[in-house]
Length: 163
Image (tube, rainbow, N blue to C red; front, side):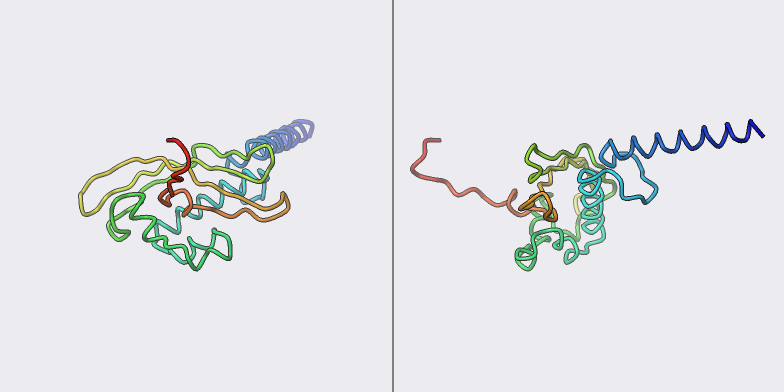
């Protein structure tokens, strides 16, 4: 009976330690469906969901990660073409992984670095690329929104500044 209690206690401590490590890692470890990891866990999960939507060409859903007032204006197929240099139908996202996620000191800005392995179907080439996705929110209690389109927009040159 003592051995069974020791085994149960050891499993409880090990499981609790794993869940604590999952939470403290910001969701970097699998959390068995539990909402652990705080903001970093949410950002990792959302980024994975975003790339899955892109992988399955669900561009309407991929636009929902942006601010509600910008969702109708986000042209995901155009952004994909700018990112990869091919039309979305010529792109096969084979793998994607989170390299790192971080939130700034204010808790209002975040970035998630992802690594993608893609096949350019029309060119019959496989490429690996890394992308940084940026997230923002108004207050620490507000929901996070992605700003993919702003990082791909061409810069307006300010003629009054030296370059």
